[in-house]
Amino acid sequence: MVFRRYQFIWGIFTERGEIMTDIFIDPTKSSITIKVTSKSLHAVGFEITVFDSDGSTVMEQFTGNTQNTNPYVKTLQQSPSSYKGKYIRGTFTVQSPDGTDYPYSVIFSILEDNIVVNPEIPLAGSTTNGQAQTIAVYHIK
Amino acid sequence: MKQFIVLFIVFINFSFISAQTDTSNFSAGWGNLDFAIPESPAFKLLGTNPDNILQPTSVRNAAISIGNYFAANSNVIPKNLAVEISPLLLNGNASLNDYNADKFLYRTRLSLGTNVGSNGANEIAEGIRMTILDNTDLRSNNDILGLRYLDATIKSHFLDRAIQCYAQNSSSKTSIIILSDNYSDTSNKIFRHTIDSIEKKLYYDSVKTSISDSISKFREELWNAPIWEIGAAALQSSADSLIKNLGFAKAGIWSTFGTHFMKKDQILIGAKVEFADSAKWQTNLSIGSRYYYGINEVKAFAEVEYNYINSTNGGIGSLGCQFNITNGLWGQFSVNAVIDNKWNVSYNPSFNIGFGTPDKGKSINGN
Image (cartoon, each protein chain N blue to C red):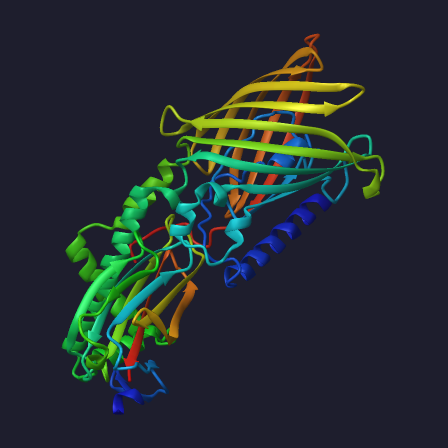
């Protein structure tokens, strides 16, 4: 796909390598589940969006956080085979309780029939003014 | 002058170490809550300060106390030093959920201190501190955590909305997935800044106020909230530097409760029981109260204390101040009047320095 190799921003084409995490699923499994795990002393909030293969049409979307359950898990509405070629994107916001800065760690995972499918996406860094935002994308194959 | 140079070097080294650990996984995962550096039980039992009230403070991953630095004759190396750590906070994978499920264990701290006594004896003290109640701890404050999780969730939604807005107004027809990936490329600063600006506008247009601003008010108001701690320590002493000659010298148990009457004050009520191995066993008792007035960064205090030591009555009256020198570095100066059983009053100044894991950024904003 063209957009996997090139980007067009501010009127300039630039070449990039792999831009998202490919993940291979078994279409014969019965369910596909999203898992978000907080591994640091931060409040983690997120929005998960499933995009169609054009990269822009929204199929499913939900928000959540790790306040009551860590890890947070939610099973998607359709069978795994329906998600072949689609994109699962997570927008994440981490905040330290007191607004200070220290390293955060969040793991974004996909499960099939409650078993983790590799690779998981580790999100790590340090907050600035008590907050950090990041995005991770899976391309389902 | 030598003292200032050594102090400066220690501070620089400490800042350097902190800067290093901030980027490592080992140190991940806890807020620092830059309230005062706690006096550890081991430090307290070394007796570098004559008062017996153990100041309670929210747990940090590590803290260092240096006692009577300027009062301790002309030696360049300070004679009194103690380190306090929270073993469970050294687990870099601990989440807020883990912390709140086992608050008592996470707040339990171990301390180790050394001292060279006035008679030249080497002393080693080991201590443990447990927190029964800590309403100053933002990591376990349900109101603050609720706001934080809500804010993080809302901002994640508005980050998505910002990218959508950019895509709709862009002539390049770039897909949202590509734009999302560009945002995750941290080297793409101009694009990130553009999306962040759109997100901020969407956020404030919708939420109208910054939830983070509300949280910063909580932080200023909570330094003097109710807190209750218990500590214990044991001290061994040796006439020389040989470990085999170390012998049990004394042990102490403390309990301190802190609360406030007004926004800018804090009162501590504390008690200490000490068992000392002297010519015969002594049981000493101290009960006292310390009153702080000020704000988190600078506060003055006054203290009165009754002591029952070696079957005689005595007391201590103190005046002093505690101040935040810079991020993670605290100082405490006090002048103590020690009254013995014959009503003789001796004067004893003390100056202690505390190092704790610094905050990299103390301000909170709605970015």
